[in-house]
Amino acid sequence: MNTPTSIQLGDGGANGRARAAALAAAAAVGVRPTSLLSYRSTGAIVVLGPQAEALAAAERLSPALRCTVVTGEMSARKAPAAVTVLQEKVIQVSGHLGQFAVVVSAPPPAGGANLLQKLGAERTHFDLVLDLSDPPFMREEMLPFGYYAPRDAAALEDALRTLPDMVGEFEKPRFFNYNPDICAHGANGITGCTRCIDACPANAIISVQDEVAVDPYRCHGAGVCATACPTGAMTYAYPSAADHLAKLSKLLKTYREAGGATPVILYYDAENGHERLAQFAQTLPECVIPIEVEELGSVGMDIWLAALAYGASAVLLLTTSATPRRALAEVREQLGYAHALLVGMGYSERLLRLVGEGEDVVAYANDLAPTPASPAAFAVFNEKRTTLRLAMEHLHAQAPSPRAETMLPDGAPFGEVIVNRDACTLCMACVGACPVGALSDGGDLPQLQFIEGNCVQCGLCEKTCPEDAIKLVARYVYDSETRRRPRVLHEEAPFHCISCGKPFATQKMMQTMAEKLKGHRMFQGEDALKRVKMCADCRVRDMFKTEHTRSGAT
Image (cartoon, rainbow, N blue to C red):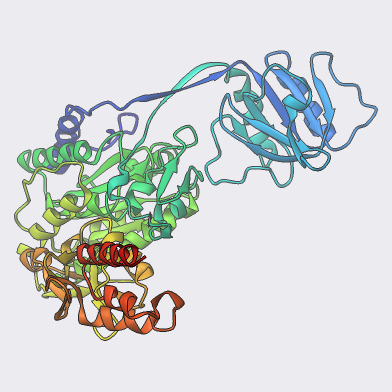
């Protein structure tokens, strides 16, 4: 959270003076540092595209950069002495600043080869890429650092001015933290949640078996991965949610104490949002408090609802034409969930709004809806679900017309699991797949238990169930005790071991097993079928006893 120091805001009235005091107080709240990532560029650049355009660009960049032009065509035009020109068919470009690999076609069976390795060069990677191809080889909404793919003359001119300065050591914050222990991406080879992968505008997140992996060098800090994550396994690191909310709480408290009324939080991103805000800052109502974030997608439902609980009269999200499409789509989905939660308590959707390009921020700020009369004072940690719970409990306690529960749009990270008791055999495959402890067995009892407050609706239980006995229902139960109380989804009479009498399965499971095994060649004998009805210990003892008897007879 940054204060808009380079933007002039009015402070002539009571709200304006309170806003100035609040922004100063928030700026004084410290933020825990994150680790840094280092890039190193020695100035080796590859220019891709039609020869005439590529050579013209290389002439501008040389000798500040060591230029290699790779083109699919060759002409009589002579290249500058310091520029290497190659005729190759480029297949793929990957990497980031200081580590770009260019793969070109090669004879079978290889099919492709690293360009620099093919040339016998000492290094295997370029530091920079200027891609003038149509279409470019990399098409992410947020391109890797060091990769330039200008689509018009103005963008090309800007790239040619910037590239000579891209030599040396560069650092950036590590924007994310990842806890695989609570990740709902996969279990036992089955894929569940893919929201962070789908939302990342930099394509920096991939699936790695049951977990995800983030390339920190390709990450731009869009933060929408943390916004999308239902469990809190992916969190934004700079600032952390706890640090952001500490600043926000201090800001709103100071605003009230300084005599301010009806505070409206306006989030905007540090680049294009900053430019848009500057255009109307002088006419911004003094009750609107602008807060700068690295990217708009880095603040999500936990932050929005906590802001309302802390006393904000509304939260506005300022978008621009440059807001990444995938990030914006995820923010819209999250707003849909948050709106349903608010409406279920009797609040208006107007408390949370996107303000798109061309829409009037001033009009939105003046169109306020009722909010909680008493602001919350809870402290939070970097636990997304805990923050959401605390915010919802406070909002619900002062809600205008709360319901007991509300239905949510599909995909929402709250809800229940419905079990078809006729189909369920209590095999507990769903329990093994659940990443958040929402499903559990009954210990010594053949039961399937469920805690709704833990469920993130990832779908792993539904996909894992061999009997297709599970379906998900997105909803929110407002009563905290009801959400956190275990309840039995299904239970059956136990099946007792025919040898020792210990319960070890259910009647239905044994019936299903017997039905599936009756035609199997290994279970045609009386002994084999008898062992199926024994617990594990008795089964082993019976096998040894049978083998011993046979050996003695021999």
